Image (cartoon, rainbow, N blue to C red; front, side, top):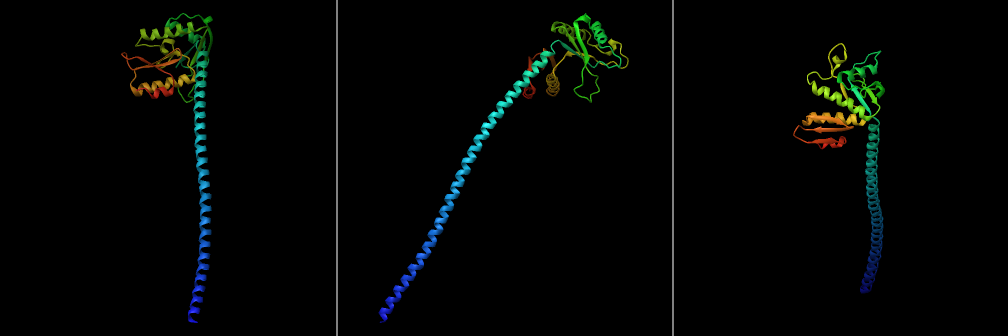
Length: 247
C-alpha cells in the first residue's frame, strides 16, 4: 500500500512538474517570441533609418552639386554684366576731387583741365558731362565728374595727357590751384570711369597693395593691375578672390 501511494505521489509530482515546466516554457517561448518580434521591428526601423540616411546624403550631394553649378553660373553672369557695364563706359573718364560749386559749368571745368594738360579736345567731341552720385554717401569728397567722349581714342588721349602732365610735373601734379580754385591746394585725379564692381575691386587692390608691400596699382582698359616693384612682373587682378592668393 505504501509503495502504491509512493508511486501515485511520484506520478502526481512528475505531472505537476511537467505542467509547471510546460507553463514556464510557454511563458519563456512567448517572451522570446515577443523579444524576437521586437528585435525584428527594431531591425526594420534601423534598416529604414540607414536607408533614409543614405538617401539624405545622396540628396545633399545632389543639392551641393546644384549649388556649386548655380554659384558658378551666377559668378559667370556677374562677370558678364560687369564687363558689359565697363564696355558701356569705354568712352568715359572720371574726374575726381574737383570741388563742387552751386552754379558751376562742368563743360568749362573740362575745358580748363584740357588747357592745363594740353590735350586740345574740342567741345564737339564731348558728348556728355555730369556729376555722379557717391558710392559712399558719408564721404567728404565731392562728387566725381564723368565726361563722355565721342570715341575711345579721344578718351585715351585725354587720359594720356593727364598722365604725362603729372609725370612731367612730379612736384606740382594736377591740382585745384591749376584751375583757379580758392582755398587749400588739393589733388585732382583723371582716371577711367570704372563700373561699380571694378571700383570695389580697385579699392580692394589698393588695400592689398598697402598690406603686402606692392608699390604700384593702376587701371588700364577697365582692368586692375598690381606690381610689387620695378623689377617684378605685373599681376592682373581678376576678382576679389584672386587678391586673397597674392603674397
